[in-house]
Image 1 (cartoon, helix red, strand yellow):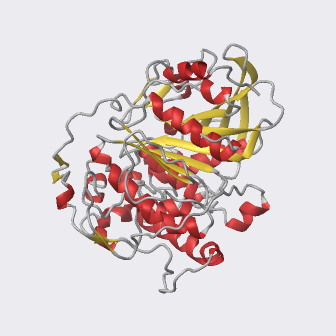
Image 2 (spheres, rainbow, N blue to C red):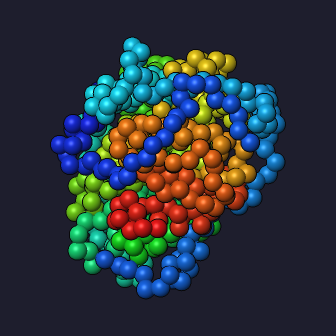
Amino acid sequence: MALPFVSDRMNRMERMTNGTNTNSKGTAVGVGAVGHPVHPVHPVRTKRTSILSLLFALVILSSSAAGAQNAPPSVVAGIPVNYDEAKVGTYTLPDPLVLNDGTRVRDAMTWWVRRRDEVLRLFETNQFGRAPGRPPGMRFELLDSATTTFDGYATRRQVRIHLAPGNERPFVDVLLYVPRGLRARVPVLLNVSFSPNRSTVVDSGIVGGDSSWARDGKRVAAPPAGRGALNPRPFLAQGIGVATVYYGDIDPDFAGGLPYGVRAAYLKPGQTTVAPDAWGAIAAWAWGLSRVMDYLETDPDVDARKVALVGVSRLGKTVLWAAARDERFALVIASCSGEGGAALSRRDYGETVAHITHPTRYGYQFAGNYATYASRVDSLPMDAHMLLALVAPRPVLLQTGDTDFWSDPRGEFLAAVAAEPVFNLLGARGLDTKEMPPVGTAILHTLGWYEHAGGHGTIPSDWDVFLRFLRLHFQGVAP
């Protein structure tokens, strides 16, 4: 029997009632490029800083290609790729502060009561697809209650979230570490990973996660964690917990994955496809993160008002959409999210809607409607700057690489510039600049930016910036 399809989008009043509203300090005056033609432009504390630096050296690349980038492809799926700023052309972005009826939004109340929901529905209908709410029968199974690990200064907890009645799949395994000796609940960084937990963190006590999905649709043995591992220790040393989940537990990442993930539980008998405005894989992964948040709200060691998300590439898109849909997430860090994430779709640079939705590539990750804009991106009623605006006034950090041309770092930066008026309207601080800062220079305002020297993914120095961003906005510690 198919599960009922009920939305779990939280409105602002629900968020305020639940006490999970997180505002950021500071205001800034900014002028967006929206509505005008845009032209291309060329606990446990560490004792010594050196110890923290050493720990960060142990955070190995989450993407093996991050440090060095091969020559970008000139043709993908039979479609030419532009990497020439002079050929981007001009475009006009839709204004996030104009209602569907043409009325200008002039105050925060109008944004919260009317415009935000309009924008959210635009993305649901045209890009990511509608997702259901909390499933009936969902339950939490404690696999590992409170095991001391990491040389005695962290506590590990492992929880299996059963997403449907019974003990079979689909379920999501949550791996959570918190500092020992807690005097209060701690903020948590929730990482969504391309690998099962045992392949993500070096820890012999991790249970489950023996296999993962291959891109050809087969289950393969999950290797032990090693190169590419996530190291929670630097975060734990600063009083921040770390959790991780495997995106494949939620929904597989291949074109024929619909029958094998959580979306299958919502199919009616005989149904083999979903409606053109129904959830794609990214919306399913984001939905799964909300289910993890359901658990974190019950954990006695977690400050559920301060749960941050981090994801890379398609999982960067995922965390942005998860934070847009679910305001319980207090902060988001999106790494190299590119097309369909923080990069402007209207910019003909690097990957485009046509590339990403091509039948041979990743159309299954989006609502079917998204592909209809492949040859008419100027008709999109929204763009990436409006996705960022949906996160406001919560902190969001965009991290990119200066040679990740396929993901269009400049397109992400320009989206942040165009989102700034919404952040300002809600009393939050934007980038305060229209010029991309030098590579390696971080902007850690409520709307933040960081570009490393290198390609797609994260490198060890990125995690140092992530920690600074978290400490600033969760603990009030100046970077």
